[in-house]
Every structure is written in C-alpha cells, then in structure tokens.
Length: 144
Image 1 (cartoon, rainbow, N blue to C red):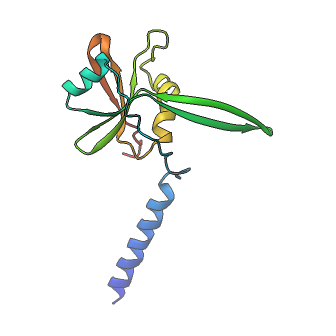
Image 2: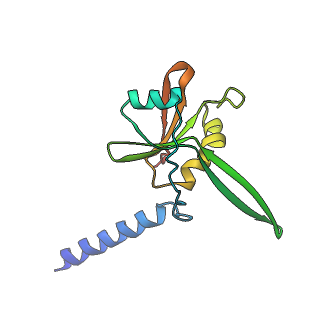
Image 3: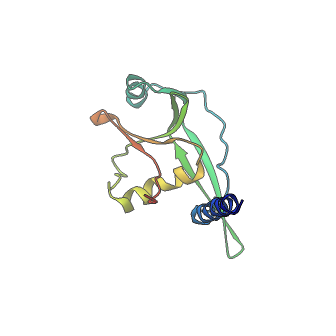
C-alpha cells in the first residue's frame, strides 16, 4: 500500500513539475476568414508541385495596440494559407525589398508574429519562387 501511495505521489509531483515548466499560452490564435480569390502566381504553382493545396489567397490581419491610452493600428499580411496531409500552414512569399536574414534573430524579427498569432497552424511556409525554394518554419522549444 505504501509503495502504491509513493508511486502516485511521484506521478503527481512529475505532473506538477511538467505543468510548471510549460510556457504560458497568452491566448488562442485569432481566427481568419479564408479568401477564395487565389490569383495565379509562381508561388502557388510551387506549392502545388510540392503537394500543398492552397486554400486561401492574401489575408489582411488587423492589429490594435494600446500605448499609454493611445490606440495604434497596424496589420500583418499573410500571402496564402495552404494544407497538406491535414496540416494547416501560413504562407509568406519572399520580397526583394524585405529580405529575411536567416539567423535566429532575423527569423524571430520577421516571422515570429505569424507563428504566435496562429499557434494552431503547423508552421509557416516561406516561398522564394525565384529560386523555387520552400522553407518550412516551425516554432520549436528548447526543452530537449
């Protein structure tokens, strides 16, 4: 009986420790309306070649911030939304005037807001149609 109680206490202790180490979720992801207007673009062709189904065209995500009782408005743009094997991905296309620096801080600065706004998505696809390249970006924890 003592061994069973000790084992249960150990499991409860491990559960509480795991729960305490887990990062807090600020809020669930925002929901978006799909845009059925998907124009012809080399990025769309590239996604289809790699087995993705494009289910939405460009989306505008309005953002509002309160800073010292002043309302500031901004927005993020998602180029496409794609699926593959029941996984949902946000898609951004490369822009020559806004290149992404492929370092931890560069990816954080340019792409992290998308991953945080939609945590239920499987990741973000970064499309460089000029070089026929798709990069899959997933927010990963360092708990290993």
